[in-house]
Length: 456
Image 1 (cartoon, one colour):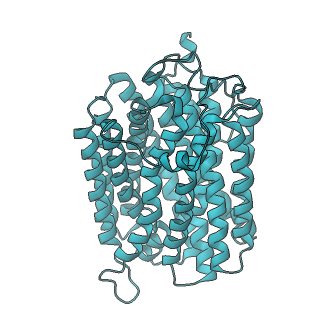
Image 2 (tube, helix red, strand yellow):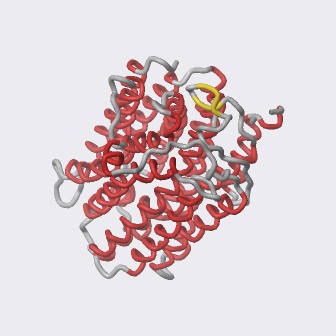
Image 3 (cartoon, helix red, strand yellow):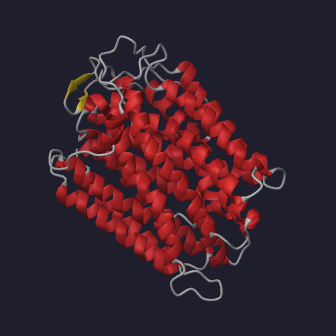
C-alpha cells in the first residue's frame, strides 16, 4: 500500500466534516476473515484504503441516524402524547426492544459468518435490516397506543441495530491493528453526528407529522446505507473458505457464551465493557426528561436544546474519538486512554448531577461526549485484537455487543427505579442516577486496565 492509504489527522478531520455535511462518499472491498488478508492470529495486516474507510463511515452514519434519533428524542415525544406523565414507559420500551435484539444477534452473527452469496457475507444483512427497520419505524409513526408503539420500536430496533452490527463485522474482517483506533474513532464520531443532525431534522417536522418524525430519519439512513450496498465492495463469498458446520439450535445457543478461562483477556474486557455501559445507560436513558425537569421546560421544547447541546458536544466527540483513537494507534497504548475516558465520564456525570442551568448542563454533556468517544474508539480496538476466533468474527463481535446491549436492555429499567428513590411531588432523583452512573464507568474501566494482559 502507498502513503495515500494512510490517514493524517487533517484528513481524518475532513472525513468527519464530510460526514457532517452529508456528502456521499465511497469505499473499497470488505474481505472475509479467511482470505489472504488475514496473516496473523490478531487479524489482517494489509492496511485498508481511504475509500473503504469513507464508505464504512457513511454506512454507520445512516444506520445511527435511523435508530439513535428515536432513542434520544422521538420515543419520548411519542410517549408524552400517548401516556402523559408516564416517562418510565421509555425504560420499558427500550428494555424490551434491546432484549429482542440481544437474543437475535448471535444468530445474525453466525449466519453472516457463513453466508455464501454473490453480494458477499455482509450486504444481505444490510438490506434485510433496512427493510425490517423501516417497517418498525412506520408502525411507531401510526401507533394508536403504547403496546403498538413498543411493538414498532422492537421491530425497528431489530432491523437498524443489525445494520449497525455489520459495520463492526466488516471492521473485524478487514482492519489491521495499526488502523483499528483510527477507524473506530471515525465511525464512532459519525454515529454521534448522525444522532444530533437527526434530531435537527425531526425538529423541523415535529409540528407537521408524527409519522415523519419517525420515518424521515429512516429514509435518510436508508439512502446512506444503500450507497455502501450499491458501490461498496463485499466480495462474492460463494467460494470463500468459511465455517461449514450447520447452524443448529445447539450452535445458536452456544454462540451466546464463551469460555473466559480459555480466553481471559476477552472475558475481562467483556465484563469491564459491560459495567461501563451500565453506567452510560444510567446517564443517558432519560436525557430528554432530565433536561425538561432541570430547566423547567415542556418536552416539546427540549428538542432544540438537545440539538444545541449535541452540536457543541460534537467538537468534544471529535477530539475524544480521533484524539484517543489516533494517539492509541501511534503510541501503541490502549488501556491508558480507557482510563482517561472513564475518568472524564465520571467528571461529566458529577457536573450533570449538580446542574440546573444551561451552561453547566453543556459542560457536563461535553465532558461525557469527550469521554464516551475516547473510551468507545479505544476499547473497540482492544476487542478486535483479542477476538478468540477470527474466522467467526461476526459471532464474537455479536458477543461483544452483549456487553453494550444487555445494559441497554435492563439499565433503563433499573434507572426508572433509581429516579424514584427520594422523589417527591413529581421531581425525580436524577442526581443519584448520574452519580451511580459515573461510579459504574470507573469500575468498568478499572477491570480492563488491570485485568486485560495482552494489550498495553
